[in-house]
Structure formats: structure tokens, C-alpha cells
Image (cartoon, rainbow, N blue to C red; front, top):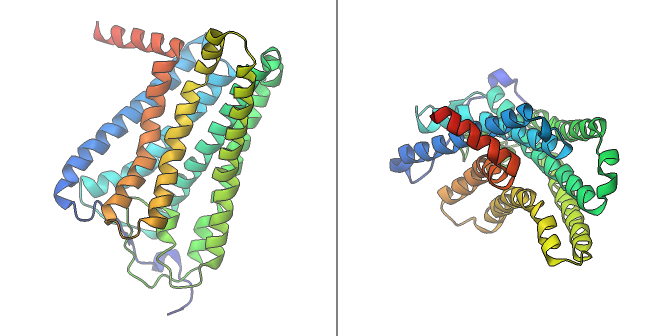
Length: 314
């Protein structure tokens, strides 16, 4: 069953999957996903507009928030074409090259989001533990370098994945488990030796998600230690309140990811739609909730948002 690697034009197209076993609910699923897309795209676009227009928000924390919003828009637009095609127009075929491109962008934006959450935790650490040095540590130039480092790291991690897949012979039915292309899904389809793919996949997960989550945890341990040294209970709560939005963003990103991993490892006998729904939560919920959380918890953004909505209404 080995065979030689094929050119991308010789690969048969992949077949996307909606919700196996819940075909009658696909239209309702499209309405739900359409709502999530709308909230995500409009919410993140408003965050970017408000930060750009309001001079007082031209600070490191909001620069990182802008990067997070751009990244969340990228996640949404990466999955939008095939999700609409699958759930709305029942077009389930995607070419090999298109699938590789979508896989690249989905994973690129996922790794980038993890890196952005890490640099945002560093921002909170400096603001709370070394407030007098905040302006000198997080200069505009350093913020730009940190953002570029996150983007370059994500690109370098994801760039080899399509080429590692293209070298393999695909001789099975190319039916995917989702309405979009993910590397863990694609890696099941080749009939060649996927040892290198598995090792590299494990390496990039540990060196991005694993390392980032560990460093975020360490930063919050240091923040908590600094906060507990404050004598006033009221000042402690006020200080911790500046971290609530970021902590929520971290949780809504990493908790669904852990859930998807646990379901893949221990929920093999669960219906396929359970895995599909968990994957949808992982990809759709963070881009939708991040702008909602930051709009609610950030006074300047909330006030500006009210002005925009009231101005539109009247």
C-alpha cells in the first residue's frame, strides 16, 4: 500500500464533514455558527477601531489586545469558507492544496494566540510587580519586537507541516472529521510511515502550548505573591481586577484545548459529533468571547463602545 508520493494535482480532494448523525440539525448549527462568526468579526473589529481612535489606549496592554483581536479575526476567516460551504451550501469537497493552506492558517493563528497570551501575561507581571519600570521595560519598540517574535515563531513551527504531509502517499478514503482541515485529522489519512509527522507534531505542541502555558502559570504565581504582599485587602482586589480579562482569555483558550485532547485520547467510543462539537468550541468560542470580555471589563473600551452604539441608534 506504500506507493510513491503524488503531486498535489494528483491527490484526490478531501471530503469535509458536518455533524455526523445530526444531519437534520445542520441548518440550526449553521445559524449558531453564523451568530458566533458575526459576534467574533464585529466584536474584534470594534475593539481594533476603538483602540486606534482613542489616544489614551495607545499603551502596551492595548497593543497586545489589538494583536489578539487581529489574530481572532484570522481564526474566524480561516474556517469561514469551508464551514459556510459545508453547513449552508452542502459543498463538502476541498482540494488538497486548499486543505493544506487552511490547515496552515488555522494552526498558525492557534499558535500565535498562545504566544500573544504569553506576552500579555508578561505585561501584567511587569505592571504589577515592577510598576515603576513599566514604561522603560515595555517600550513601543520592545512591544513590536515581542509581537514579531510571536508571529515568526508560529510561522516557523507550522511551515513544515504541509510539506511533511505532501511527502506521504494518500491511498485511503480522504474523509475528514470536521468542516475544516486540521493536522491531527489529516495525519490519520496517509498510508505511509507517519512517525516523523507524529514526532514533529508533539514537538511543536510542547514547545508552544506546553511552554507558553507553563510560563503563564509562573507569571501568575509571581503576580499573586506580589499582590499578597499588599497590606490593604481593597488594593489587592483592585490590583487583581486588572488581570481578570487576561485570565478569562487564557481559560477560554486552554480549557477547550485540553478538552479536545482528552476527548481524542479517552473518548474514542463517544459519538463522532461529540468530538466535532468540542473542536467547534475550541475554534469558535475564544474569538467570540475575547472581545465580549474585554469590552465588559475594560472601562475605556466599554465607554467608547456605548458611545458608538448610542450614536448609531440616534
